[in-house]
Image 1 (cartoon, rainbow, N blue to C red):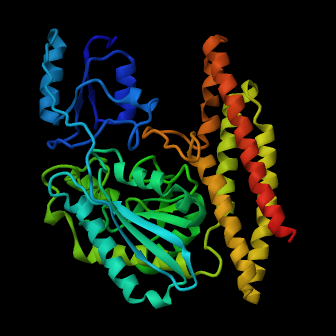
Image 2 (image 1 turned 45 degrees about the vertical axis):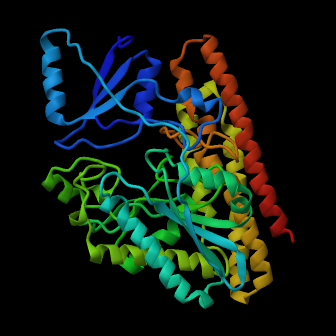
Image 3 (image 1 turned 60 degrees about the vertical axis):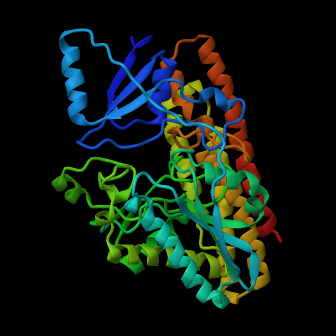
Length: 460
């Protein structure tokens, strides 16, 4: 029972845990970080400026992080007696005018179509690994792409965001709001550049992308860095503020320190600096960066982006996305059993996959005969697919909204179905089941919209 008390828990502070504690009635929270360092963070669950509805979710508890030694001292005191703790926090909240820097290198054939490359400008303390290295990467890519701009078919837009931590992605969400229609109509993909080029970051084991970008990213990393890589589903983090708009995304954190080196150095999981525990502390200084690794990582970003900008047909494989949707729907269906019938969702997904296979056979033929006009139409279909399938995979809210910065499983509209078998037949059960039925309807409708897009181009 934590109501009316200060909660103390192990780990780094996070909005998911903080919200859970606050809903349970805590009056304050203390997070015991795993090591000797105290990591700055934010527990705000709302991305960017809140709406009137989301403003109610602003944290009310004072929240502090302490290091392991302080935490163990407090926990030891609690073993024998009641402990009284005084928390004092200082919060500066308000409206601030912030610099949001955007560079654009125009392509010569389809200048209106663009890739958005971005990273956050603000940092905690010196913030070399998170994110001065990323800012330098963006600047170097801007320099090189501008130099060779006459060789670009499409445009590259580069943005440096303010308000990453302190505003919970304030810059990128502001941009998503104010340039939503341009992004919706013309953004081919976005790529986040956070914490590249850090010392000992030899591997690419924790790279994020939406599934349709997997083949492209693996191929580039293999060719440029000579590394095999594992992909992760993008979290609602790292200025991935374009999921609701349905924009394909690749990269967030790039290279990482191998697990064996982290174990050797006593590192624990953190959210940047390639896995270095200097992340979000005063120790994130020049020693955290490695110029050679940064150069390699910049080449990975540049090679990936140029392939998107100059390919005849966008190099995205939405069969990967559909396969992920099928995999997770099958998992949910097994877990929920007869509590919620997902058979129609699976049936529609398999029909979508069949149409998608036909579509990609057509794409191959178009490339072979170099039919540039037909390729443009195919690319528009791919943008349409991303606008439907990316939100279906990642989002719960609508196109022009922002999901909360809390962990959600894939296909959020139906993901909570796994809770039904563990619930009593109560009002809460019926409320949730009704929500899930509506979510299932939205999922099926989205799949059918994607099929209609494909059938129109296949039949033309």
